[in-house]
Image (cartoon, rainbow, N blue to C red):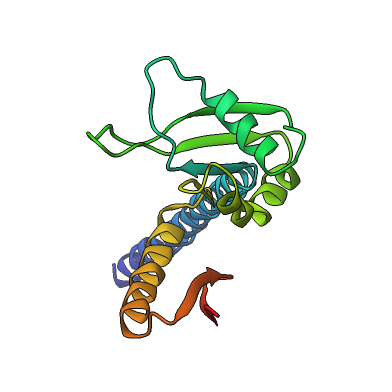
Length: 175
């Protein structure tokens, strides 16, 4: 009788242990599959964002064609406009505040070259227009924080010209 109870107890314990191991294996495979999917999704999103940029400060018109606006920005910076895959306004409409135009080009270098020359828009008739890379939510929050810090620095010392480059606030004398 005791031997039977002992065998039953051992069988229950071993079975429970085997089930735990099996479940851990299934769970870790599911976690790994989910992690791999997230990593692939993240890489795809990052790759797509590298081909996109935003144009800020262009007034909205009823029958505007965002693609033509983007091509005009390229021309103002003396570039031949590349193949634009998609362009559209993003965000909610608000009176008196134009929404940015998101532009997707075929190659990341086409977006990067334009972003590098964006400061030259100040010397064209598009003075109030500026360009930015397409950022994800975390990057937007970090950039917003930097902009807030930069505004504080400008109030403290307006004799300098402040700008953000490589996620750092830089400055030069205005003279």
